[in-house]
Length: 242
Image 1 (cartoon, helix red, strand yellow):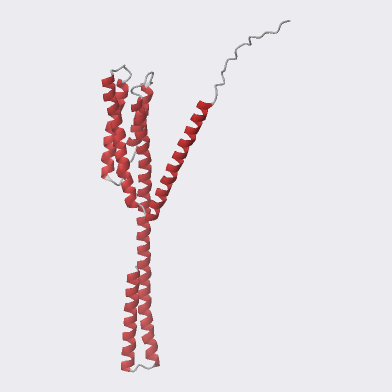
Image 2 (cartoon, rainbow, N blue to C red):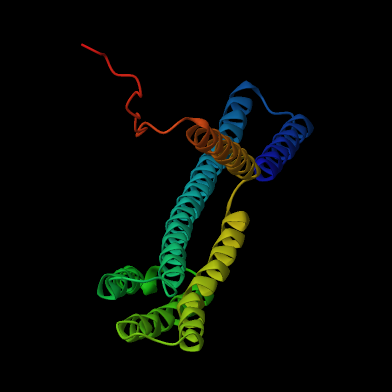
């Protein structure tokens, strides 16, 4: 835009100088000079109007591009949070394969809810076809995981449990891959300042997690070192003689 403005000013300056040179050459009188200057002013007004229209058009294009960028960014953040939630659910369910007294109907419901969250996404509004394919793959993996949760209602041998655990972790691994893809998309559509703020937030989160672990470890150590409250007092060997 700045380049076009400079070109317009240069063109107007050349035209003005040309008109002035022609006026001097032909020897215009005062009345003719007034008409001459009016003509130059009219040309300047036309060029200014064109410049204003171009400026407004470029501004609108930039605003539309920024709105589209922010909309895409919000979608990517939401999808990353969704993939993280589903990955956590699959990891939790897979970890219960070797446990006892697990309510597998409830675990199956957790997987069904995760699949429902993905299928509820408006796939036609997702701007990246690769992410759409990734979502469909995770949906298929979750459907298989639900069948494995159903199978765990019956006691299984260790080898079968190992196989079921690996199947349950498949959508977990796929979600982690999707998180990487979404993060790459975010890096492409974010400004340098936004990336810097995101990194600072991550550093604060990491510091808070380390602090929380230290506090928990300190509390556990303190709990172990404290004597138990349920100490049974032995009766005294000495008794009062009346």
